[in-house]
Image 1: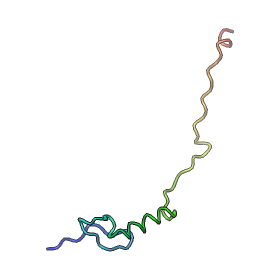
Image 2 (image 1 turned 60 degrees about the vertical axis):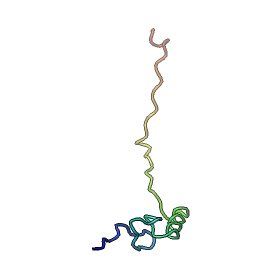
Image 3 (image 1 turned 90 degrees about the vertical axis):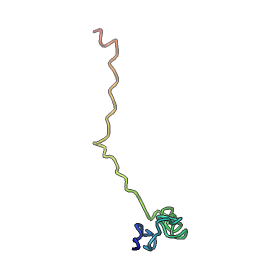
Image 4 (image 1 turned 120 degrees about the vertical axis):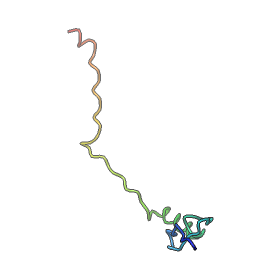
Length: 70
């Protein structure tokens, strides 16, 4: 009974052996293709920009001691 490979190469969609040296990729070539895609900016992680309304307000300075005596 042969078990199917639990991994599929994300670059070429080939089956990756359980003990593959380049896991999760099937080969060094596929690993380098994926790295090149990251370096060229093909993959991006979205960033949320903060709205000005959501920004944390600056704390107010403490009152002067001179004003507290009056």
